[in-house]
Length: 282
Image 1 (cartoon, rainbow, N blue to C red):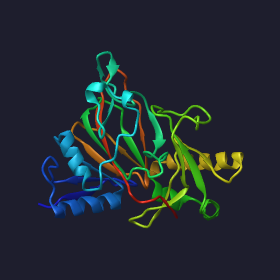
Image 2 (image 1 turned 120 degrees about the vertical axis):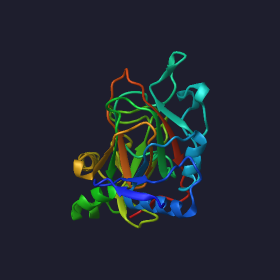
Image 3 (image 1 turned 180 degrees about the vertical axis):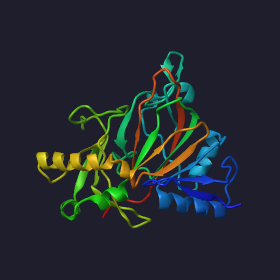
């Protein structure tokens, strides 16, 4: 039976059913999976029992597994890996075993502070809280379509600076220290290399300024875009069950995490897919 693609009915997202990804995926199923990824931006499989090796193998459908590019001391040494990052508040030996353990996390895309941001991210849920800890996705194709023609013209060809200090989940300060954190400029409006569509490529957690605009104008425009990105009409919210595998396209989506009770355990495995294509302006 072929993979069944079930759209979420929201601005993005689709469930892929009738497949066990703990087993090798056929070429025909891989084609369906990849096309669903392009069509829906975020796809998910429910009720899967997969190992880290399985997760890496599934990532191979989308490209080369990305390097875990954060300081290694942010992860418990028992769980250190060059490819797998744990997202967890679980405590062993008096310390949390993973990164981003608690609380909400602001809207962002993964690794825009690198010259070549990662193409896709995967999360597999091992333990989830009884409530909260959901992952929300915002469709940046749709956000671009909602911009005024005047703003699209102003932003065409403009670059924005993206910075990040590892471990930050809520940015409640003005700017990162660029002398000590990774940072890189990318187009505000990005052309997707495969679909050819235009997506907004700024986010409140990591984008700090639109280069070439005055400080106040840059702040005002970014604040307006950030408010738009948070509107429900552009969002799919994934409520986790144990055994979910979620894969999303960092080139055209933002994601965020909702808060959850500190005393409830949450453990997800994160593996990314690297990209060999330069970021293109729309």
